[in-house]
Image 1: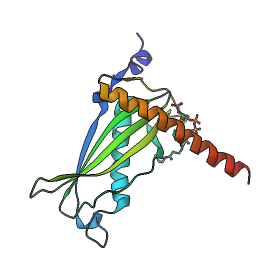
Image 2: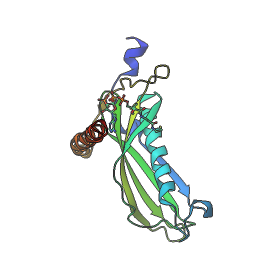
Image 3: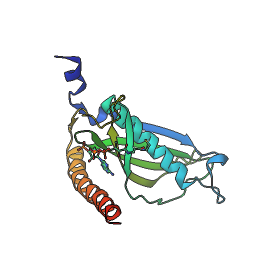
Image 4: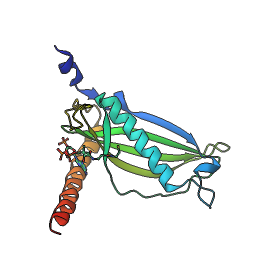
Length: 171
Ligand SMILES: CC(C)(COP(=O)(O)OP(=O)(O)OC[C@H]1O[C@@H](n2cnc3c(N)ncnc32)[C@H](O)[C@@H]1OP(=O)(O)O)[C@@H](O)C(=O)NCCC(=O)NCCS
């Protein structure tokens, strides 16, 4: 087996799942004393980048972030707990599900605040063109169910991308 073959051996969801914990400080906050939406997006992007990088062991770039909602504020002094795991791997693209929860350090109470689906693409470090990544090995019923939903999301996402491209080309 060559080194290139080893690079493309299937990898489990658990092999690349990541957890990030951030303490919300005043410089992360808006005028209401809770974390800025853009800061949460930054953390989501980073957690998804780490997971897709771990899976592919290749340079990765963000291709898309799906619609997302901020369901509850995360206040200064609370933790933002960010968990990322792969849901779908195609030829060069990877969909990562990122769940965000707040944790109150004094009471321990945790609340779900956001879920985002982020698509990363692995690129060749020299040509900067998309390159193949290892397949995803699904092990649990939950992973298989999430994968089935991810296939539907992928179709909607690519339809949207094609519609935007067609609209621009028609101008
Ligand atoms: C992402 C990027 C590399 C894709 O390149 P491209 O020339 O459009 O490549 P292709 O059309 O061949 O698509 C390559 C893969 O990306 C996926 N892809 C591209 N755009 C996508 C989008 N908007 N949403 C979801 N997937 C997308 C394709 O489905 C394909 O997946 P597959 O190989 O698993 O089948 C290119 O658009 C790019 O460099 N974008 C800028 C990335 C960036 O700067 N991000 C922010 C900073 S990291």
